[in-house]
Image (cartoon, rainbow over all chains, first blue to last red; front, top):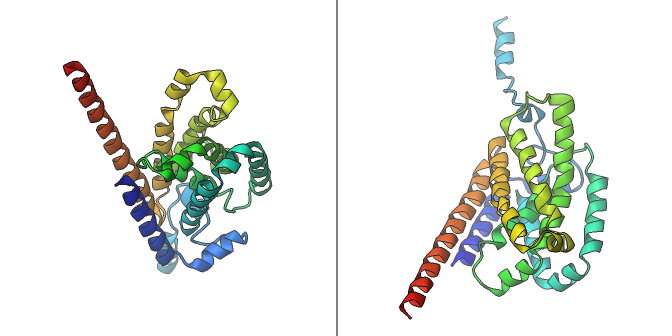
Length: 61
Length: 206
């Protein structure tokens, strides 16, 4: 029973990944190029927030 | 995640087909993987330095533990130690390069929580990986080895937390992977416990 659950889990996750992540991104990362799917956002890693507020401030000025 | 799951498929397929060869030539395979990890494990972001390859190996090792008795489980168990060592070799550049980034660029106390949990997971992993070598395992002794390897579950928990707390688009997939593993493991332990109690009762009656 557990084997079937594990198999279903991995098949479902694989299909979900294929649908959500552009396949070109996978080819890119294999070729050594990072992209939004396979990469690291340094701001996010460092705990920084997005810069949306800055744009608002510029508009106010 | 496509890449991780595809790697899982390859690792499982090769383990099922070549389990004897993997065991026989394990030290050569370790050497090749170590070389790849050294070459690709620099500061550049790639499938090794981002930790995808190491994680794939650990997923196979992790889920082998919750499979039902079957030929698949038997063959994966035969190479479980080897896959653990290979996972550790591949994850080491990820941990080291991000630790360097934390110390040099982000600042020791300025990083996201997922960072610290990742480092803790790496620290927990080191003795587990070292004692996965057959000769070290013999040196440590069966009971001590078994006691030490209970910390594997702590390692899995920390890896799961590390990945979930990154908070990227893959968070739901990570929750599914570690959530289902946790449920299956608890179910497996409960079943074992019930069986053990039944056996004890039967022995007492006879």
